[in-house]
Structure formats: structure tokens, C-alpha cells
Image (tube, rainbow, N blue to C red):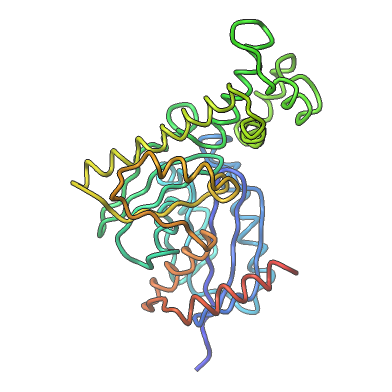
Amino acid sequence: MALRYLAAVDMGGTKAEGVVFKENGEVVCRAVEKGGAPFDNGVEYSLTNLCKCVDALLDQSPEKPVALYLGAAACEYYMPQFTDALSRYGFEKLRIEGDGPSLVSGVFGHADGAGLICGTGSALYVRKGDDYYHIGGGGHMIDSCGSGYVIGRKAIRAALRAVDGSDQPTMLVEMLEEAAGFPLWYRLDQIYTRGRAYVASFAHVMFEARDKGDVVARRIFNECASDLADVIWAQYKKNGGPYDLIFNGGIFRNYPEYADAVKAMAPKDMRIFFADVSPVYGGAVEALYDIGIKADEAFREKFMGSYEEIKKQ
């Protein structure tokens, strides 16, 4: 009997990544497009990028997948629009969720657990049976604590205040100017025009300044790490004690010292794991679940091996 094909897409604020794979885990094609959470650029922008990703997958796939699982940031607030956009493809199985469940599934499988994402945005996601919720993650205008966007914004604000004399001097001024190619504090129009992902792109400057001993950068680092620890504590109290938690996201992956600082401020009896797989793998686990198959170690090994090979192409 021929193996069925399935698809999974993970879409965050910066990129959308999708794969088509066989039910034994073999990845046959991959597509990467711009991402975009609806809160940032509007739902139409997000859906345009999402459909580009799905179209690219279908163009490459040897045959049409029977199922598609999508994990997308903030999609739960725009579910009718996302459903309409993907229903036209006619997949036999279609499931759309926020980007938290696939983070949990990538490590624990389709099971209860929690995941703390820290990339362009941030939030702590919890899945308990059919119950799914998040702590933090209210979007960058309200609450994206400790995220790449917040780190970048705080760094730019500190530099602006150093330039106008309302706060202490910091090497962030020179380092941000070098990274941007111009003085950001005199070209605020660029920040507002280019949006959240652009601001988040300067997060690396804060880490580099901290490594060089900058006091202001160290303050930003500690403030943001403390904010992330607060959401871990909130779920700890809600849960009545420790729980299994996964760390993932570009900021955690690229700056493990930041993840370590958050962990150090969390309850000491927490069980914290660092994700060693891409979130799109968690989406694949969920797509497989939707056709009645539980992902096992053989599936994981086959998927990750072929996924890494596809990425090299």
C-alpha cells in the first residue's frame, strides 16, 4: 500500500516554513516564505504569505497531501479568514491552531505540556487535553515580554535617550548606528515604516553590547529575562506546582545564555527542556495524528534526517 503524503506549515512573525512528507516521516519538499502575524501587518498580508508557502509546497510535491496542519501566530483571532484561505485547497484533513501546540508536540508528541517561545514575539503556551491557552503573548502593542522585538525596542530607546541626554551613555548608540547603517534616532520613520520584525532584527546588538560589558545592555538583558520568568511562575501557580516546559524560538536558540538566565529565575523544581527540533516537525506530528497515526522514534529519525538533507538543497 502506497504511503500517504501530508503537509505541515509553521508561521511566525518573521517566516513561514512548510514541508510535505510521507507518513513514514520522509520529507520530500520544503518551502520558506515571509511570515507575518496578523497583529503586525493585517490578516491579508499573513494569508498572502501563507498561501505562497502552500502553493510552493504543492508545486514541488509528487502528489497532493491528504492532510495539512498549520501552526500560525495569532491565527486564533482570525480563524474564519484562515479557514477560508486554506479550505479552497481541498485537503481531506485540515487543522489550524496557534503556534504553541506544535512546539509541545515537537518534543512530547500529541500530549499535554507547555512551551515558551522566544523569537520575534514571545508567549508561554499550555495544552491540557482539549484545553489550550497562553500566558503573555498579547502582541507587541500589549505584551510580548522578553521577545526579540522587546529587546530591540528597549535597545533603540536606550540609545535614543542617551543621545538626547535623558539617560546614561551607552555603547548601544554606536553599535546600533553601525548595524542600521544610519542613526536610527534621527530616522524614526524607518522604524515605524518597517515595523516589528525590523525592530527585532536589532536584538543581537543588545547581546553583543552586554558581552562587551555595557551596563545599559546588561540592564535590558536582566529586565527581559525576568519578564519571561514571570510567565513561567504564573503557570506554576495555576498548575499548583512544577510542569514540563520546552524552550524554543530564535532568541533562545541563538543566545543560550539568555535561556539560561530565564531558567535560573524560574521555580527550581521546574522540568525545562530545550527543543532540538524545528517547530515544523511538531506540525508534522500533528498532521500525522490527524490521520490516526502516532509519531514514534522511527518517524522522528526519518523526518529529521530527510529534513536536514532537504535544507541543504
